[in-house]
Amino acid sequence: MRLSSRTAFAAAAVACATTLAACGADTSGTDDGAIRVVASTNVWGSIAQAVAGDRIEVESLITEPNADPHSYEASPLDAAAIGDASLVVYNGGGYDHFVDDILAASGGGPAVVEAFALFESGEYSDLHAGHDHGTDENGESLSDALASEEHSHEDVNSDDHSHDDHSHEGHDHGGINEHVWYDLATADAVAHAVADRLSELDPEGAATYEANAAAFHENLHYASDLVEKIAETHDGASIAQTETIGHYLVQAAALNDATPADFTNAIENGTDPSPAAIATTRQLLADKQVRVLLYNPQTEDRISREMRTAAESSGIPVVEVFETLPEGVDYIQWQARTAENLAAALETAS
Image: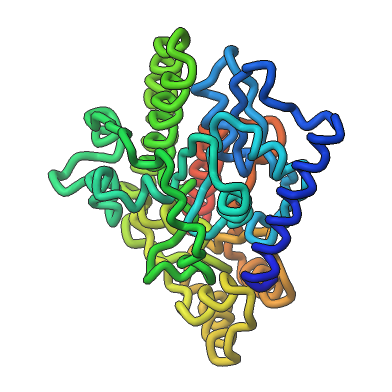
C-alpha cells in the first residue's frame, strides 16, 4: 500500500473504532480503570508480558507465525485496542507502521515504548558497541555489557511519535536495519523501559515490574552466551541470507554475510533482485562459499525459495529466522533456540 492509502486506512480504522465504542460495542473500554498493554507483535508482547507478570495481561495484535508485519493492515478492532491502551509496545522504525498510523490518526494518547527509538538513542549507544565480535569497546562480552549496563529510560519514548512521517519507509534507514528484536541489548532495554512505564501507571506494582525486568535481564544471558560462543568458535565464517532479518544476530555472532547487498536490499524492499545479484547469490550457494543460509519463511517468494533449493542441493544447512514467535515459546526461548540452530548448522558445515 502507498503511504497515503495506509494513513487513510488507519484514520478510517480509528473512526470506525470510535463509532463502535459510541454504539456500545465491546472494545475493551477504559472506563473500568484497568491498565491495558498492547504490543504490535507477540515478540514485543512476550517481553512486555515477562515484565508485567501476573498483574497485567498483555495483548499482542500480530501472533500468526506466517504473518508478515511489514504488510499488516490494522483492523478497526486493532485501532480500538491501541486507542484504549495504557501502554503500547512496538518495534517502530517503519516496521510495524500501522501503530504509528493509528497513533497519529487518533492524536496519540497512550504511553509508548518503541524498540527502534531505544536502539537509535545515543543514550543506549554503548549497548550496541562492538557488535562485530560480540564485545563492547572495552573488550567486554555482550553478557558483561548487559550485566553492567544501568538503564535510564526517562523521556526516551514518552509522547514522541516522530516516526509518524514514515521517514523509514522502504526499510533503508541509511544502512540501519530495523529488525532490532535480534539485538539482545535492545530487547533488554525494552524490558526495562516497559518496567519504567508500568511503574508510572501502577506505582503499587513498581517493585514487581522492576524485579521482573531484572529477571528478564538475567535470563537473557543464556541466549547471549550462546551467541558469544558462536563468535568465539566460528569468528568470520561466511553465511548467506535471503534477507536481513537476522542482521543483528549475524553481527553479534561475528559472522560474515557474503550475500550481495543488491540481493538482500531488493528482497527486503519487496522488489526483484537484478539478474546479476541473483546469479551471484546462486553461485555462492552452488560453490559452497558459505556455510549456512539464513531463511525467512514468512516473506518467501519464488526467488527466495530458489535460493533455499540451491542451498539444500549443495548440502548447505538452512536456518530459519522469523518475525513473530513460534507457538509455545517465549522471547528468550526463541532467541536461544535460533542461536542453538545456528551453532549446530555451523558445526555441521565445518
